[in-house]
Length: 132
Image 1 (cartoon, rainbow, N blue to C red):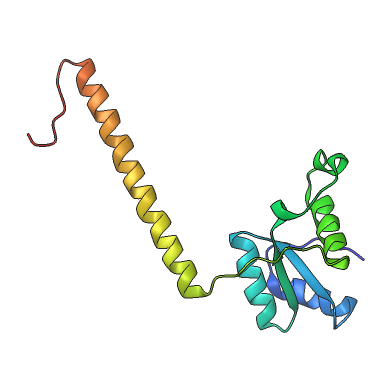
Image 2: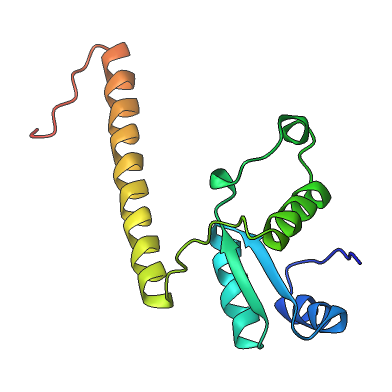
């Protein structure tokens, strides 16, 4: 059986339970995968997050990238025990990682802005100096 869902852990959990109460599910690693795994586990569904980059995918399947093919591939890998599970960070760790990413993005933005300003001023015969 197959179904298509929006981002609603409750709907996914209800569908998984309708298939088989003992069913396991797998999701791709990433921000949405971590959140969905936590929410499904909270609803009593056994869900793992798999590192797709560590799974061997036949070259013929690599051309056809879409949700249905990805889901079938993950289901096949789970059924044969070929899912490389990844560590799912807790909420505090994920918040710290988000903060670190935001800080790095802000530093990159500042650097690009300084570069843009410096080149603008240089085109008009002025030299940008942070001290003056």
